[in-house]
Length: 196
Image (cartoon, rainbow, N blue to C red; front, side):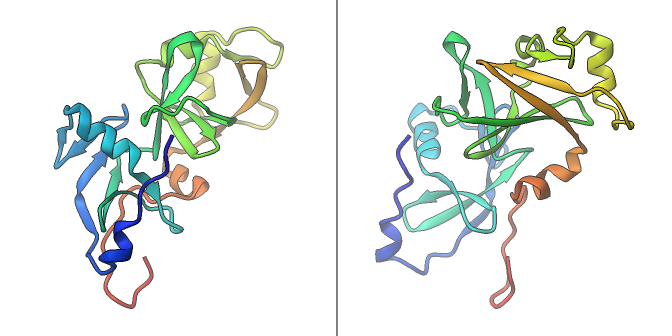
């Protein structure tokens, strides 16, 4: 996927950033002031210009202006693509899967090189068969329900079997996810001279 184009910033370095206009929902859809973006060209532009700064704030570079993105959950949303591959909401299919987690709400999170991604709830049923118990058996409903509770000492963990990998599935509180993975879900404008 092409890198965002920051060349306009060289010509207009002092354009103020924009907050509160653009968001990414938990299904990987862009929203402008709450309305789903349906225009194909605009979606492609937003996907192509999506990036983040050193503070973990995600934005879309719109010429010289950064439009910061309100994240409904994670900065990446993953979907099942053709041939059993995962892709990001921006269309990137070249993913390096590094880890997995279940949160206390039953969401499946997958760590990729770009950061942490929420598996779209529409694809969750298809991926449940990839969650296995330590003995190799596919996790049953009772095991899956137990896995969204805080683990107890000696509790068995789940493994994500995906394209030859067997990744431990850690347990997390949803509220811990932004800090653990270093992103800001709701970027806010800061006063001059204060840290972001």
